Length: 306
Image (cartoon, rainbow, N blue to C red; front, side):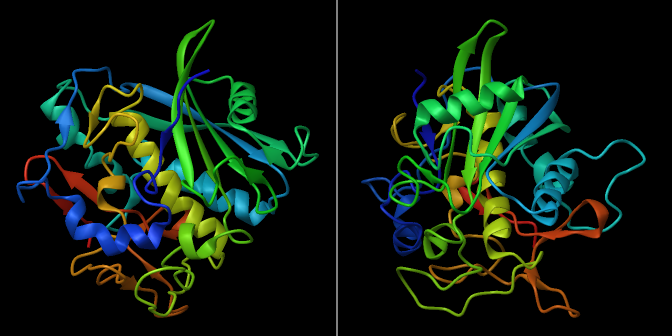
């Protein structure tokens, strides 16, 4: 059984506690910035289909928000997002990792198959082994398991909002991601800033760009896991800290979404004048999304789109 690489909650019992500790996360014992170290491992490259496994009851609208986000990561030539800042530009910023290691561009992620299991075939309480079994249904080099709001997952809301890991199969090593809808279980931990925080400074929640706190929160965590899976797929790529609880390309910048961010404040985000929703990236089909900052290994700072 493969070991899991956890999300932004890997060093904290709750997301907002991470925000309180955010300034310290970048400093070592000597007060110097922590380095994002490359551990000489393989990173994901090339054209990679991403298959989505929806477990539980998702509405068609919720599935579209998530699938459109994946489709926004690597738009095809001639279909590049016309409005900046874009999700595609955010994803291409990972080239700063690839330039320092493999000398190849970040992988091009293409939306693959979508598998829907509304019957809760494995029940409503899942363990890590169940997530691996669901990911295997995707049958791709990169599968994403998305669990509905009424599905409990091992350590969900206790130490993670999602995870990425790898396992061996007949086709070689495969990478898979899990992200859960936290709207009914812990939105104050896993859907901030679209919900009142459970810990830390009590700032008012922002309006979610797609009108769904749980799904827009999933986009944030999915983005974080995709960045980590690309640059640290097998636990020996880029990360800070211990291998068992690493800070990766996006999770090293937990709570930072725009310039001016500080603990409890996501930064100076863009606001849709029609809906009042906050976002920092444009995506496919005219959608708007909130994506996390990416840690710049050359400057040891968080790089944002806006």
